[in-house]
Image (tube, rainbow, N blue to C red; front, top):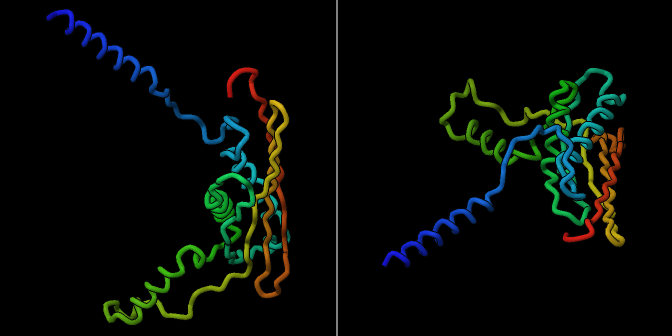
Length: 198
């Protein structure tokens, strides 16, 4: 009777030990720390792109007159062969530009349906005090349209993987249709396979 109980106890302890041994070790790191886990697009790439684009745009003549133009931003297009969260790239650029105090952004691209529903509710429902209701036809039109794309070229030979990213951003004057500013950021990353594994 005691032998099966001992075997069962050892099996249970072995199972628990195996479960504990496979639990990953998790720790916090700085969001600014260089991330080089793989050659794929990562947080450091996103930060470098946003910094380059924002600094370039803020230094352009378009924003030097102090008028705080209104920008309409379109989500960055992903032309790479990877799944990349281009909403995060777009948001990082937008938030950094907004924090500069030199531009304003139209929320039409993100919340147009919600804005229109709220205006309709305030003006037509009869539930909102007319003195506080926002009127139709008062939205501020955007002066410029900001759009961009991320492309890549990926190659491998033997144990080496090489990926080249190019991010391009353009600012278009909505009234004239002219591109008033454009810039690009290039990134190259390499990964070398170990002799064993991978």
